[in-house]
Amino acid sequence: MPPHSKTLSEEGAVFISFFLVRAGVFQEEAVSEVLVRSGTRALRDNVADLRAQVAANHKGATLLRELVAAYGLSGVTAYMEHIRANAERSVRALLRGAAQRWGAVLEAEDRMDDGSPICLRVTVQPEEVSCAVPHSAP
Image (tube, rainbow, N blue to C red; front, side):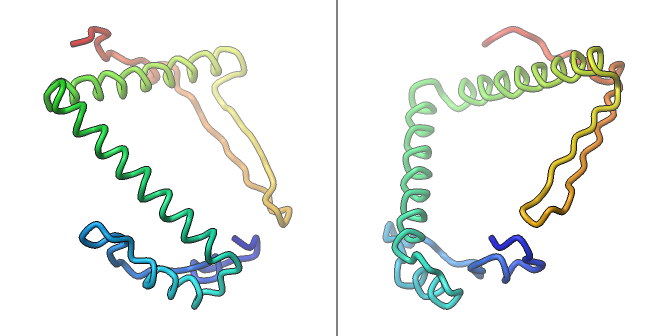
């Protein structure tokens, strides 16, 4: 994406919603048409990237179906909830520790390619960073 882009169309190809895969067939002609119209400099690479994303999604869906077949939908859903809850507890603990170490207000600044600053300020309220999610596994 060019650093001076101000609209989505300036950033690259804009796809109006359509099927990337229809009846199991990757729609290369339609994808290529949009990419060429948008001025792509690497059509083969762009198409290969999209094919790789489709393949990764297909593999993920296949593995998820296998998990559900092996452990049941309720079992998979319960474990996913435990993973989400554990991630929440971990982030909350990290924020509590950061607030204790560096204070309740955390700030950072970085620069974009054109030098424009990106500033972030997070105020941690330790009394609100507790988590009462149970630790038990199914």
